[in-house]
Image (cartoon, rainbow, N blue to C red; front, side, top):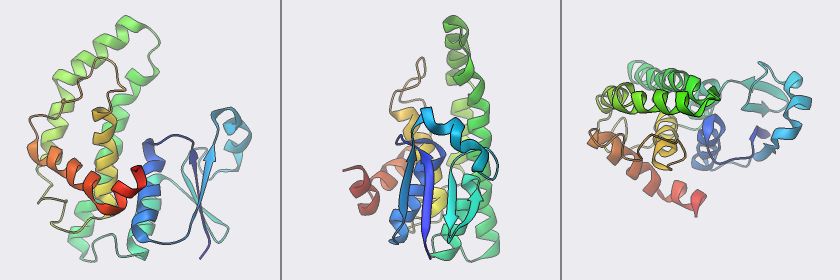
Length: 198
């Protein structure tokens, strides 16, 4: 198989967990990074007008959850048991729902309005979502000792907050979710993930 993963040129978002999945799978793949200024020229050639996009021998797959599930199923990084697989797929979807709830504050141009939105989020729904994710973690990963693609997606989400790049949201916003915090640290400490960020 020939793989090319196309995503914006930054170490986060929906493409980063797909990059990590390929690293974890240990297969050859091309990391096609798109500069923001060239995105408008390439958007029309994508399946859904969004990134990431995975080319599998020339066939294009859009949507990060579909890409992650493909990599996971193909390379043993997604549960084979149907019920456990569904539980992991629910986590993939829940991360997307969480990101959608954050989106208005990312688009807000007024500084005071943005501050109000994020202060409210940090006090309410972000910790609440932390508790929902907390319930899904067996420890250290979602299904015990095996790192899988849903773990990577959850890790990239938590990493986003811990990086301190979102004004008015403290980096310890998930402090009341110790299993989620430990999950982040366990994924970050995995040799493959650690090597990616070295």
